[in-house]
Amino acid sequence: MSHAPSPAPAVTAHTLPSYLQADNLGPWGIYLQQVDRVTPYLGHLSRWVETLKRPKRALIVDVPIELDNGTVAHFEGYRVQHNTSRGPGKGGVRFHQDVTLSEVMALSAWMSVKNAAVNVPYGGAKGGIRVDPKKLSMGELERMTRRYTSEIGIIIGPTKDIPAPDVNTNEQVMAWMMDTYSMNSGSTATGVVTGKPVDLGGSLGRREATGRGVFTVGVEAANHIGLEIKGARIAVQGFGNVGGIAGKLFAEAGARVVAVQDHGGTIVREAGLDVPALLAHVRETGSVAGFPGAEKVADDTFWGVPCDILIPAALEGQITAANAGRIQARMVIEGANGPTTPEADDILHERNVLVLPDVIANAGGVTVSYFEWVQDFSSFFWSEDEINARLVRIMKEAFGAVWNVAQDNKVSLRTATFIVACKRILHAREMRGLYP
View (cartoon, rainbow, N blue to C red):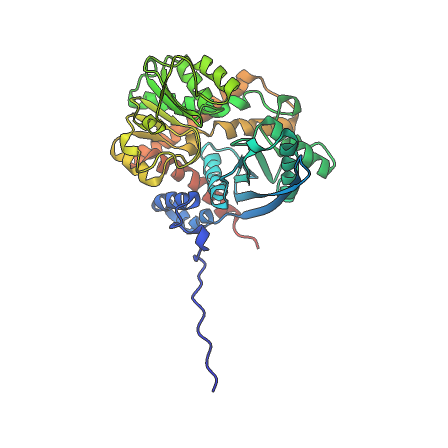
């Protein structure tokens, strides 16, 4: 006697693998929650919203290298292209021991939003290797970078996907990536990465661009809410390329940097820290720990320091439901990617703390990366003053558009940024149609 097979579970076009679902509360889950919040504001374009919930392409690669001691080590690397409807993928590469696929997918998606928000002709992409680079020698780091570049070389290129520096990567890493890609393709391709040394086609102003963008939108927002920058108290988490430059620019504008936290600890000084001296100390010692004239406090104390502007410029997931209620700032400027969880976002919104989201606040870096890419294609380079002026203009225009959408729809600046960006992405998707 035969038995009919059990019916297969229903599968629809909207079924998502578990690692792509919103109840997976990793970085990708946070991003999906943000998309769900913006969907009601997309009008007829909401028909295409599933486009935003699925990366176009995700590549996982093995990165084997020979260590200095002769043994072979294997590292896991990623390159994710979230969306390329508006142009080639664009986004950084990070080397960090906690890198995961969920994180890289979310970062690539936030790059899609960020690029659309400032209206540069890029899609979103991101890459990473799960490794603690501090444990590698310079030779090992170079071999790992070159092997990773060769492995992802099948999907990157000046008109396909353009990597850039991110956490624990820098100009030297970009130079190795550019050289490796160029050797494999048989000709020098300066436009394959941005954030390169100036002598290899890099742009003036690129290193300071993200911090300058944080400062620019911070000043614009302060003007809108009547917050005087001169004399304002600033707290900064992360004092590297983003937080350090932003802190320096705010201090030069007359603000007081009263608290700084990094991996070495937390220091405070109500009268204001000497920012140039602190930056020099960080360059020499690697962290803010031991800076003379400052009081060392427990790390958790940082979130309750009285201040007017808080700048999280370290890693994602720093402001949570556990500490958001203690933040005393009038304004939070997200220098890092994804530093605030959705629950914390709601708490800050209820407490009338203005949050300038990462997807607009830290877009200065990718904006000047765009300038670098354009300069590489034309082999004609601009002065630093020209670059800074163009950056400030684009950031001000982007912030103004987001502010107006927030006021018109009575939503947070994060939701407003997603409205502006997602409409641009999905309009491009709609106009291009589906092929085949």
